[in-house]
Amino acid sequence: MTNKPLRSQSWFGGESKDAIMHRTWMKNQGFTADSFDGRPVIGICNTWSELTPCNAHLRGLAERVKHGVLEAGGFPLEFPTMSLGESNLRPTAMLYRNLASMDVEESIRGNPVDGVVLLVGCDKTTPALVMGAASCDLPTIVLSGGPMLNGRVRGETVGSGTSIWRYSEDVKAGRMTLADFMGAESGMSRSAGSCNTMGTASTMASMVEALGIALPENAALPAVDARRFALAQLTGRRIVDMVRQDMRLSSILTPAAFRNAIRVNGAIGGSTNAVLHLIAIAGRIGVKLDLEDWDELGRGVPTIVDLQPSGRFLMEEFCYAGGLPVVMRALAEHGLLERDAPTVTGTTTWENVAEAENFGPEVIRDFDNPLTPEGGIAVLRGNLAPDGAVLKPSAATPALMRHRGRAVVFDNTQEYKRRILDPDLDIDADSVMVLRNCGPRGYPGMAEVGNMGLPPKLLAQGITDMVRISDARMSGTAYGTVVLHIAPEAAAGGPLALVREGDMIELDVPARSLVLDVPEAELERRRAEWRAPVAAATGYQSLYVQHVLQADRGADLDFLVGCRGADVPLNSH
Image (cartoon, rainbow, N blue to C red; front, side, top):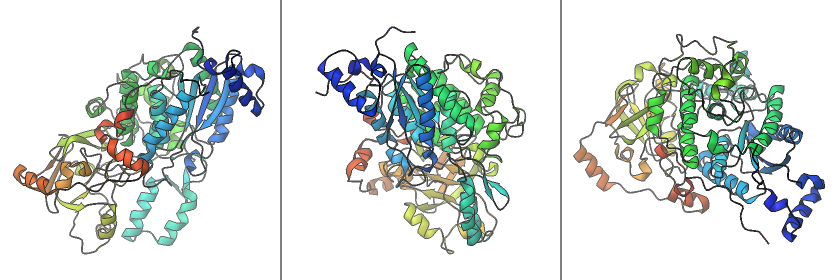
């Protein structure tokens, strides 16, 4: 235990006018006098919102966290922050990830809290809150809302997001009626919680557990499982002890923690979005992390979790099989996990998972029977992506991992939607679909539009996958041979802006290569003709476009990188 004075006492301690003012206004909520006697004040940062369906149940979890805080002798105070709902927020929740992180950072720094519980769920809420908290570096612990139960449609078990992409393609191909598609909507999302596939929400819930900033079993327990509520109560207890031990976020988010998370991402077949988010979080806490780390550490890591969109099962089965501790134990036993990495439990990563048992060997496979021998994230480079691009091998078609094809170019999503339905579109199965001006600046916000649906005329021929290339992102619930996050993006003058219809593009994933087969002199001529698109000119979007970093640097805002700490601000009166 530390004897360091509690930060909250700068507000609530003593007999000054300011201290009395702080206490008396707080007492209008019915708090007793001894609430301010020097016990740790725990801020519960809640992303609850009815506009964020994945997080709409977090009020209940917050109450269980409060129980735990009170049991451990702390004083819980819940506060809201901007909630980023992937399903509703336009033009994309990613545009507002950095804004929400600013909200969290300033809320933590400006208020009388000694430690923080981050209540997260939907895709961008997890990285946004961790980024904001990392910039303050107080004792912090994460609690995810958990995935929803399996979807059920016409006797079939279906995954949120993943099945929508599949059904949509089936309708275009004439394999599914529009009436059946519409009828499926009620059965896909039938309980509280985030996506039940290994999409970005489940990936990020796994990442915070792998990083050691959430308690074991955080990733997989369903949102409606009583054990999720028990975990919330334990989280409330634990944050009080962390404050007393002065266990700050920087003591957990070490280089070893990020190395572990990258390997875990490969083993679970995690979302490509994790690349952006972990690089951004590392930048906030002061750890060097780049695309080369993802490629190097991901090589040799098999995908052993057989979950949609890469595999067959869903998060509910993953939970029943034993969840992430089983995966982490397997990695550790094969020399792919740094066992001594510290965690919020006060014990090491290995101590947290050493006794984990696999109750579902079909869901969590043995190392000698992986879903994909090489999981991880493939980082591609070449004259089309000088600063890198990413591809998720576990979700791609093996036969397309080496491919050469003719470019079919879409300048934006509106053009894509207009042309893709044209039966006269000059495209075949060997073509390479290119979508540009959808990166951090170009959209703006780097929307999840990179996994372009295939042309109906090819779907009708039985074609199910093609090489697709974009400076956009892809939903973690999606699948296919899709090259994403091309940097620099087209709107920043990257080579993607220079691609013309009919150019030949060569993809070689084993060689980590992405090449536009056009002479350099011709590219220089095209570059001289290129003009930057008109940037957004209103409010936050204008600020974002001016300061956003490229995808290879996590798409954070340049002025937000780094840890600014949580020194007590000046008095307000």
